[in-house]
Amino acid sequence: MQPGIFKMVIGIVGIAIAMIMFPIILEGTHDIATDQQIDTSTNVATSGTPSYQGVITLSQDLYNNSVGQVTSITSSSGTDTPVAATYVSASGSLTVTGLLDTGTRTLVTTYDYDAIDTYSGMDSVVHIAPLFVFVGLLFGGSLSAYAGFRQLKGST
Image (tube, rainbow, N blue to C red):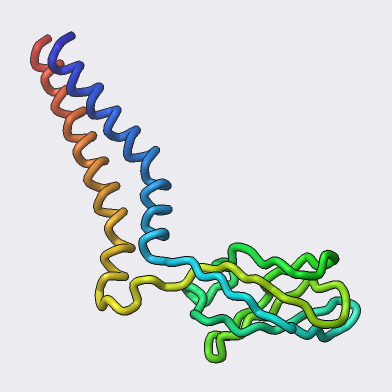
C-alpha cells in the first residue's frame, strides 16, 4: 500500500471516529456535570379532580431547573402513573401528575442535580471540552487525508 493511500485511510477513519464518538462524549459530559439523587416523599396528599396531582419538595435543585432531569418517579399506590409536570426552583417543589386516586402515598423520585456547582469555572470547561475534542479529531483527520491526497497527486 502506498504511503499516500495509508494517510488518506487514516484521515477518513479519524473523521469517522469523530462522528461516532461525539454523542458518547456529550453523554459523558452530562455524567460529569450531574449526580443522581433519590428522594422519598411520604404522606403525599393529592388534589384536583378528575386528574389528581401532588406536590413534593426535592432535597437538591434539578439540573438546569428542568423536569426533563427527573429520570423516574414511583408510587406506593399501584394505580398511579406519576409524571413530573412542573418545577419551581425558588421553593424546590415538583408537581407530580398522573396520581389516580385520593389519599396519601409515598413517592420515590430519582433525578439529576448539578454536581460541579461549587467549582467556579468548571461548568464552562466541562461543556466546551467536547467541542475541542470534536474539532481536534476532525482537523487531524482532515489534515491526514489532505496529506495523503497531496502525496498521491505528487507521485503520479
